[in-house]
Image 1 (cartoon, rainbow, N blue to C red):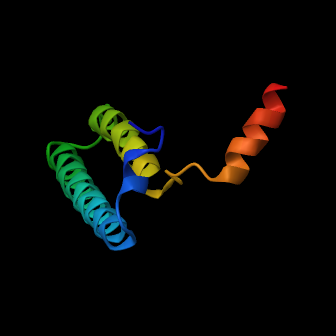
Image 2 (image 1 turned 180 degrees about the horizontal axis):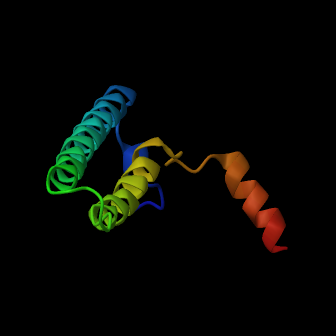
Amino acid sequence: MTDKPPETDLDPRAQAVERLKKKREYFQHLAIYVLTNGFLVLIWWLVGGGGFFWPIFPIGAWGIGLLMHTWDVFAPSHLSEERIRREMRRQS
């Protein structure tokens, strides 16, 4: 068993395919978020729209999940030797 993250065991083509799948899933998630919450805001507006803006709860809660999904897809996921050395220097 190695200490490498799982994605480093894959060849570059397989890594690229995985990244493209993750990006496609992210943009599907984003589209569903916008459409669903837009629909909720439309419902709020159609039933009066002047009262308490209740769609803020699903928008905010789901937005946190979307933010984490964004982090998962677009943040660097590999550990470079430079990052490892920098962390080792920080610890000593």
